[in-house]
Image 1 (cartoon, helix red, strand yellow):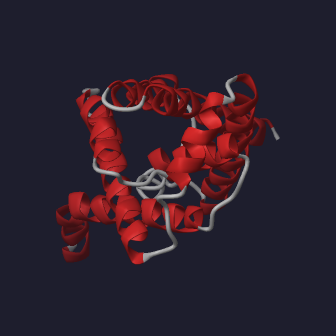
Image 2 (image 1 turned 135 degrees about the vertical axis):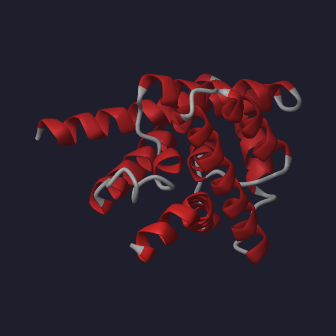
Length: 198
């Protein structure tokens, strides 16, 4: 029970940190917002919080139970939406910004590819952090935002601010997951081939 409680609390913590970054993005726009957004993932990594997009590329090598990964995702989504809703109450000017942003999303192959690309960047950013450099986060987060790639937890926060739902969130989740695993496989293909040879 203690482990589940910790898992949930750290997932809420991650959603809160990303929501702060997303708040800055909606409030300030480019070019400052995407840069400040990096604070969210830096906080997640340095404080050891549970962010789905930071975990899904590592759940095989870290032996994270798939059930735990799904709990992280669900809590991230619920908490993220609620934080977004809170921001819409405290700063109503964000609502129109969020609505206009969501209007550019679509349930399409293009959106899925953009989500896939975000997943690869998230894996690389966290991997670089694990190799003792925050540069992957500092540059990677603005990169995916400026490129228009889609991050499922940031998107659910935006949905909360807009007080709505959009089916493109499903594609963002799938794309982030597959993109992260794709680059995990590329990064570890030599190791995996060596194990097969043995």
